[in-house]
Length: 95
Image 1 (cartoon, rainbow, N blue to C red):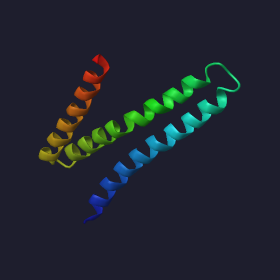
Image 2 (cartoon, rainbow, N blue to C red):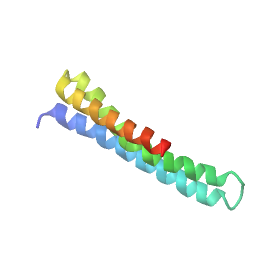
Image 3 (cartoon, rainbow, N blue to C red):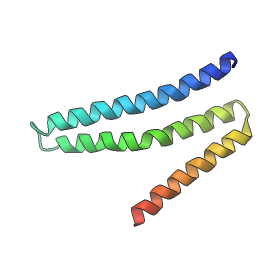
Image 4 (cartoon, helix red, strand yellow):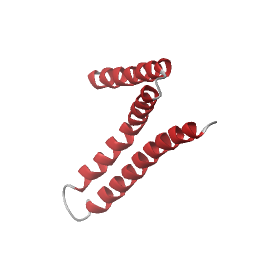
């Protein structure tokens, strides 16, 4: 692996860490705030939405990184996976 591969892995891992930590903070804050204010559960729900969006953000980050590297084959694969995730989300909402 060269230095650029480690940079790509670092960006993708930071994306996942940021999403997971942000979701954790929002969920815990929402659970604590529900004892004090009536809108506390909304903060916890926002944390769940962040948690659900994190894998999609990781796929987007990978697609952008592949486009930056001009690796169009893997960018297309990443875009295809993203479209499958979006389609599953849309079909899941309609059900």
